[in-house]
Amino acid sequence: MPTPITVPRLGWTMEEGVFVGWLKRDGDTIEPGDMVFELEGEKASQEIESLDGGVLRIPFDAPKPGDVVRVGAVLGYLFAPDESAESGLPIADCGLKGGPQLGDAQRPPFAPAASQSATRGPQSEITLAISPRARRVARELGVDWRTLRGGGRTGRIRERDVRAAAIATHTSTPVARPGGPPIPGRLMPLTPTRRTIARRMSAGVHEAAPVTLVTKADATNLVELRRRLGAAIVAGASAPTYTDLLVKITAESLRQHPLLNAQWRDDGIFVPDVIHIAIAVDAPDGLVAPVVRDAARLSLATLAAESRRLVEAARRGALKTEDISGATFTVSNLGPFGVDAFTPIVNPPQCAVLGVGRIVREPGVVGDQIVPRDMMALSLTFDHRIVDGAPAARFLNDVRRSVENPVGW
Image (cartoon, rainbow, N blue to C red; front, side):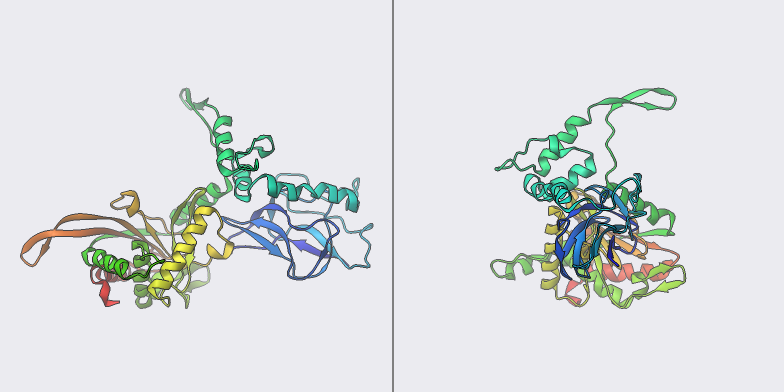
């Protein structure tokens, strides 16, 4: 019997994904560990490896690049070398969302190998004609990239070409509103990334019991520490950012307040043995939150290097599923954007998120004197189902004290 190739679950909340394309052709011999197809999860794409070996047979109506498929859906089959696919198994439900189901008795279950190879051949041309990032953006914005002229050196279609076409396509049209005349404007399609952000942010408000605490920290010593670290860094490296310092401070504080690192589950409150901190990054495709794993155990230099890798990957659109999954806490720093303070939203099942505002030079009282100090606002939003106000306040107070006396940790 042939072995089905199915859609895996890339994240614990994933129920469906976007089929990006086959990495092998119909009739290819597959070895265990070979990458067979590419799948895009909630905010990252990943090449999926085969756990078994055999001859790949792709059904006649297998999903096309850009199709939404459900977790567990069958995409193709692996046949033994001596096993014929002529009477192979049709797929009763490939998991296509909003489209026809496979297994139509009027169609052959598998296309002839030569014909199928011809059908799948353009996959290699797609890779050459358009960058993977541009292809993903084209799918999200509803742009047919095959009609575009590439601006790359070899005529390759780039992300900027796709976005320019999207702006030109969605011309201003009146949008009707209840009780009044249409309002001129343009309707932007919802991308999968934007839908994921909307779903998670809504869950943080409607599925949790969010409460926000705000305090102000004297970050003068933190600013001085970062200056000294920058001066001591050897050539070729870079100083830790303020986000790196806040992530390290937060991780150390979570050691003492594990409930802020906990998660709500239907059968109880789960307290992880690890501290994985997500950092909010403003990427071209929308907000992403790559995860610094074991943040409390990392040295500051190692943490900064890992954070820098994740941020660069996020801005290139090159994050993998493992880079954005498994966070137990989130730090969101809007200081670089000139924001003083804000109310961050919890990302369930996490318990809390720390919002960091900009550092502002303000008058401060030291002893009996008023002197200039570098002040920073800290906002902690937490799920009141998991932890009460007093423990959350103690955690935030410990973070504030560590900001004011960073040498302590």
